[in-house]
Image (tube, rainbow, N blue to C red):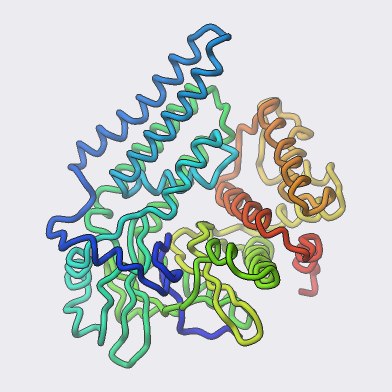
Length: 457
């Protein structure tokens, strides 16, 4: 049984040692008496729309050029658009930064230059100064000295909507104190509505060339708004703790509800390394076991529990030391998705089709789940089953070939409808594929999937 009592609640760790270490960046941020999201609500809205329409205007101008000049102009529009979105996200922070982080994990939606630029947002979130954090804690919880025996002023992890500080309770327990940034609850909901409107406008201008963009826009808005509700997140943590009770190698936090109020959420602390960074330096055996734990944990969520941790940012997974091998820590439960029984059964059929190389079953499962293509041809959906296929093997070249087939199919007969709850499942699968591709483990994905499709499990 995994040990309870160690997990931080950050959604994009930037500290020196995973979510448990501190790099001192929070201490360099200054006192920040008036720190908060920059600009008024009106000025932020103006910047958001100006950036969106500026990017759109470049593409409109490029497409109006003669064909011999169009490709170069579109490439330049991609480069400048990616730069503008990155710069605006860094400046505005809040919901716009969250949008950039979401988009960076969807190479199926954006040109590579966007993914490359926006991926930098995952590790470049400036922390709030200690004075601003302290004011929020004391406004919602009371004097810091009364609640905690010690409170580390330096941020252990800074993210788009909140940051985490390490603290010690009066009884000696080490905890992670997640503090929502000033003005987030006031500003972000309207910004997410504006973002949804912009994405819906883009869908009309693009002629639905981006699969399910209206559904993605709605799912993103819903997910971000749910992240502002710490009562809901505390309930999510408790549910995950129950689901993974007794699962070896996976740690889930406990909630300290007596110290969780308003914009403050207190969880157990976990000492570990950001998984993505750890995988670059640990030996092959540890890397293989860590990725196996991650994939197995997500298969359990998708196929067994029907309750999904829907923010697969690598900083939300920590590699922990264990006596019998590495352990995986799951952190940040603000974005979670319920998968109804019918959806779970459809996904089980999809995975089964991958094991049996049954294209017909894959198409039927996708159709039953609610996917639709522009032509209405069920056969066009089969390419999307490559996300669940194992017939080509697990090597990097096979995965790239499967991805290229998927992108070609998406261009020839685009998906026009994606079930809302599966938007986040797709994001999870894409991020997982990237992690596994880098590690190239020797364990069999097919065997791991089969263990969850076995009805005796």
